[in-house]
Length: 61
Image (cartoon, rainbow, N blue to C red; front, top):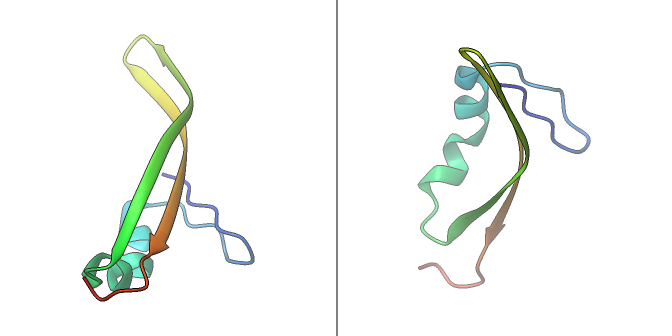
């Protein structure tokens, strides 16, 4: 996993991503919208690039 965020250090593994996003996952008014930008499968290797937009509603849930 490679996680790129504007004005932030690039993260290269799931543990770093989960640690950085833990607070977002706890918020009841947060949501993610994901889109697969590209995908390739060659033999037993798969690669995908995704765009994930996180947003928070104005209400608390």
